[in-house]
Length: 168
Image (cartoon, rainbow, N blue to C red):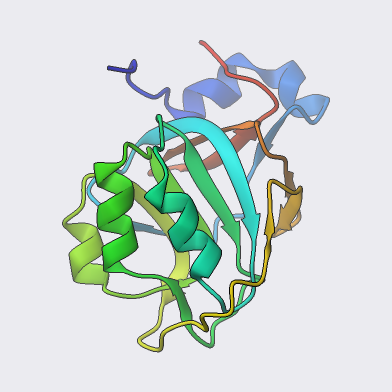
């Protein structure tokens, strides 16, 4: 079992040089907290889609191995690109968390899962099923650049992105 994730405030306090040189970045505080695991961290897998959730579901069917899926959904507020069934599957497959730059649905079901989920909002309409998107690409969410393989740290204070795994 992995060590407990580090508090984001402690990481910021302990690493001022990493903040100054851009190796440690904070997400703009626009994400809502869902799921039972409010504190989570892990290596990032990136995905870029728009109002389509086929690739999201495909990723979450894989073994997570403590990773965090970061989905750039273009900030769309017109439909949900993540719902309860894939989140349940992600929990069962060992994903640490999912961050969605877009909407989710089935909030009550997601809130019952032992996984960390962050999203902009909830929306009842489902996404398209075309399978269009890009895997393992750099994404830019709310002014923060995120690369596949970087590390994400999330707690109730916010979300941090680091070029490498951090310790305090």
